[in-house]
Length: 297
Ligand SMILES: [Zn+2]
Image (cartoon, rainbow, N blue to C red; front, side, top):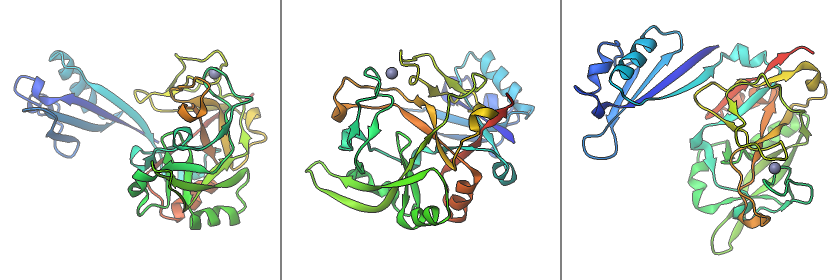
């Protein structure tokens, strides 16, 4: 595993420009992407380095000396062998795979047993409706996601998952919905998980729980400043399936009791390497796969 660090800063705000920092830090075009930003003379700079790269502390120190604000993202990168050996993998879709769908598009949910404040625990009761205006995002793809971690795969890949004996998985139809009430079914299927795991270990890092709802379940969000590292107690994985959901629900919910206007929080998907292999063999790209860690006891 390597940890990749991406540093962003505004080059135009540094006396002498981006070069005044990049040259002494020895960050050439192989690691630094300098491009036009928004606004006159604006320059956006992205530097991507391994966490252990000795240029990283030099770069950060120089930015600090210039009093320049910077944003830092960290993520773990894994080899195929590491993914293959993981107990479970978090499926993390990249933003370009994401499309709007869910309650505001017309998907229906039963909220009888859901939290009245945040909607955590809402149970989907219809096919998944996605925004018909965004169908371009699906073109040439075999798998995608909504902004809310609803995973969808095209029919043939759904068939491969169904016939490979993946456990804990069921499917729903996917419809495109347009403003004029036109709806039609797409050759895609939503992946639904039947199993919810127990809460993760508090040793998990890279997630924040600062807006916890009183129900204890939602108000968890990922943070890019630290890599997402989910930890589970071994005993809590005894009944795991090939496809599972986290007990925690992520994202920033908005729910006032009206489902059609809700932004529900959502659980994350954790799958075995068997599912990853099927995606990989189907040529699916655009997802990060993050192994969970297991602690004994
Ligand atoms: Zn709640």
